[in-house]
Image (cartoon, rainbow, N blue to C red; front, side):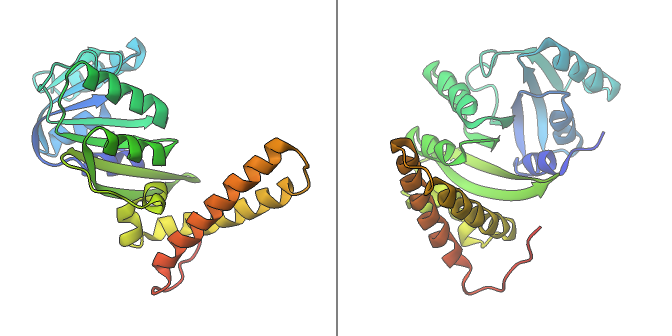
Length: 238
């Protein structure tokens, strides 16, 4: 079994630890990979769906890792005991769903040292939420695979540092490191925003005017983000 580029990046952001919990584990590939690579001593593969979890059990058994990987039917973090895992992985979900999972866990008193996340949407909102509940983002990576852009982030339970609006929008570390993939995304997004705003200019409605203003703000943030790259060479678009 081979991990996709996206899931390999998720797995590679996990630091050596005693136990990981993979929420929405699907086929259990990430848990198996982390055990085989010696990154984690043990793993808990969790999924809300019995079908994928059954396949995860089969894959774990095929590898002879039943004594290292537990497979649990779980709605988010519901089946995870407090302190049971050092690192929780949540990947391939929409941002609001991911926030809900973490929030419900925290309200039950769960304290998770490290989160490795790959939200599919509402990424700025995920960053803001993490800061609001006492997690500091310590690492981010952006990649391009199969025509889509993905952002993987690591957050640790520690005093968060204040970020600028543009950093919440595009990622503080991605900007500071001048991520090439982010630069490609920024160039594409800038043109898309311009085209959308041009279309809205033709519509004389209150809703269109409101959206026009929102796009104008987004264009300002995009332009501010691109300034981080002014001292570097231009990158080729994917």
